[in-house]
Image 1 (tube, rainbow, N blue to C red):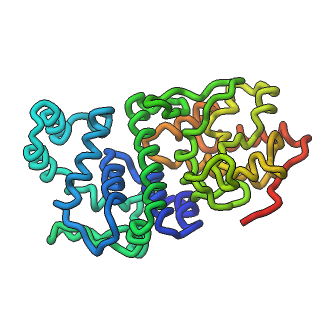
Image 2: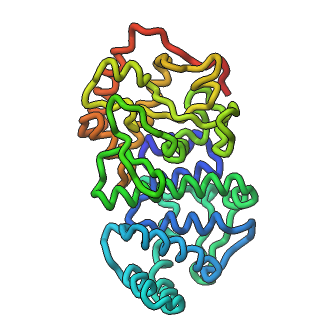
Length: 340
């Protein structure tokens, strides 16, 4: 496993962050991983589950996404996609499951825990694959999630956001734009000198922060309302006002490279950041996160970082971002009064 991915994974060894590691850094040859994650999060706490009892949730989720976006596999059509096309016409569920059961169980369970060229250690896995008995044996890791409806909701939201990004990246052959899912469709938010709605970035970026505020490290509550202290705000780490004034083309203030998730207190409270640049340690944290994006596999955020910074490599990303930081050296910097 690459050092940057390992650092992310080991920073906070909780079950939900194990799932986040899988969703963020697992290889995306197909989107089976997302369908399986969704099916698992629909279960209740238990010792094990038979393939048969997981099958319908898994297939329904995969079929729903296939109908809305056929780009679910890098290799294009296969026996499962052909079966989906036939099911759309004849509605024969038994025929569909007959085809699917011969194909979907071959690799999806074994590959689920593969991340960054390595496999997650057994003590952190969500399940063990019992091929002989055709079942998954649930671990304490997954059951800690399944007993909490709020954790399941968080994972489902992050899983769907990640899935939509991968679909759109494949559909557009790794689109260079930061994409926002709004009112049922993706739109670009990579505009310059224009404020745009950034709310959809919450479920995309929060997993990289382990669900915490980027600045004070307080737990963020995606279910809170906008007046509560732990409400997730989307913040421009380097202030929109200054980046726009400097007119640093081709950089966009709204680019994913410059966005983080902050709590209400840090972003707009009485001691909040507002239009101040943060202390250098937070810039370094942003730089490390963006370099982490470069390690990701087959989705648009990696490409967005590279193209929005006119960079071709991690080395160039680092050089360009440091040159931008130098423009803020004359301004007073900010840091939160309280850290968690």
